[in-house]
Image (cartoon, rainbow, N blue to C red; front, side, top):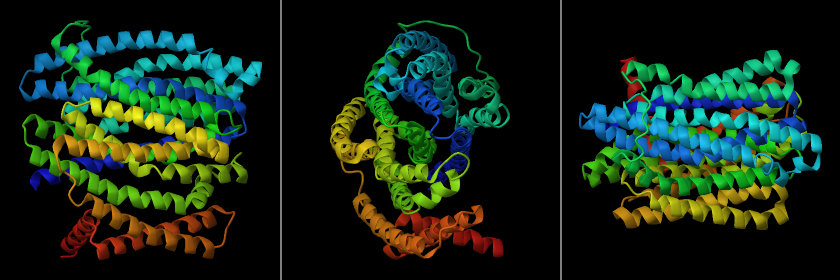
Length: 516
C-alpha cells in the first residue's frame, strides 16, 4: 500500500506540470493561429512542415527512451555507475550519428513530400514548403538528445523537469508572435520554433550535470549494451514507425483540403496531445516500476500495477471522450473564437474534435499496454500492433473520405486506435495470463455514467443562450462542464467506480482533517 502511495505521489506533480505545459503549448498554437488566420496558406505550410520532422523522428525517439530506461536503470540498480555512464556516452554518440544520416535523408525528400499536397499547385507555395522543410530538419538532433536525457533523468527518479521541457519552446513562439510576428511573418515563426525546440534538450543538461553526468564522446557500436539496445529498439521502431506513418499519411491527406492542416494541428494539440500528456505523465513513473517488478519476477505485483493504471485511466479517459464531444463547440468558441478565426473555422474544428475524441481510450490504452510489454522485454507485439493500426487507419480512411471528406481522416484514426487497443489487450492477456479482472465491468460503468453526463451537458447546451462576449462564452462552457463533472462523480459513486470513489473519499478525509 505504501508503494502504491509512493507511485501516486510521484505521478501527481508530474501530471500537473505536464498538463500545464501542454496548455501553454496549446496557447502558443492559438496565438499564432489567431494572429495569422487559418486561411493563411503559409501558416498551413508552417503547420505541415513542423509536423514532419517530429513524425519522422518520433519512432527513433520513442525507441531510444524505451531502451535507455531498462539498460540504464539496470546498471544503476546494481551499483555499476561507470557502466551506466559508458552506455549513456555510447547511446548519445550513436544516436547523433544516426540522426545526421536521417537529416540528410530529410534534405533529399524535402522536394518530394510537398508534391503530395495542395501546396504543389503553386510554385511559390511549393518553393516555400521545400525551404521550410530544410530549415526544420536539423532540429532532429535536439529531438535525439531530448529523448535520451529524459530517459536518463527518469531513471534517476527526476520526473518533473522532463515534464517541463515544452514550456521554453512554447514561450519562444508566443513571444515571437506577439512582438515580432508582424515584422518577420511566417519565416520568422519557423526560426523561432526551431530555437524553441532546441531548448527542450538544452534545459535538461544542467540537471544531468547536477547528477554528476558529463558527456564524453564514445562510439563503441559493438559494445554489448549498444547491441542489446539495438535489438530492443528495432521492433519498437517498427511499431512506432507504423504509428508515425499514420500521422504522416493523415497530415498529407488533410493538406489536400484547403485550410485544414492548421485546424487539424490545433485539434490534435487540444485532444490527442493533451490525452497523451496525461498518459505519459503516468507511464513516466509507472514504466520504471513495471520494469523493476518484471526484472524481479514478481508478476503479481506487475499485474496489480498494470490493471490499477488501466482502471484509473478508464475512469478518466471515458468521461473525457464524452465531455469533449458534449462541449466541443463552446470549448472551441471560447479558446479559439477570436482574432482571425471565423465561425466557419470553429464549426470545422468542432467536428474534428468530436471525431478525434472517439479514439481517446484507444490512444491511452495503447501507450500504457506498450510500456507494459516493453517492461517485460517484449517489443515485438507492439510492433505488430502498430502495423495493424496503420493498415486499419489507411483502409478505413480511404472509405470514409468518400463520404465525409476531410473528417473521414481523423475518424478513421480513432477507429484504428480502438482496434489496436483490443488487439493489445488480447495479446497481453495471452502473454501474462488473466490480469484485467474487473476492467470490462468498470469500463461499462464508466460508459453508462458518461452517457448520463453527456445527456445533462446536451440539455444545458440547449438551455444556455449563445453569447458573443468572453464572459458569455465562459459561462456557456463552464456551467455544462461543472454540471457534467458533478453528474459523473455522483453516477460513479452510485455505480461504485472504484478509482473515482477512492479519490472522492480521499478528499473528504483530507477535508475532515483540516476542519478537525
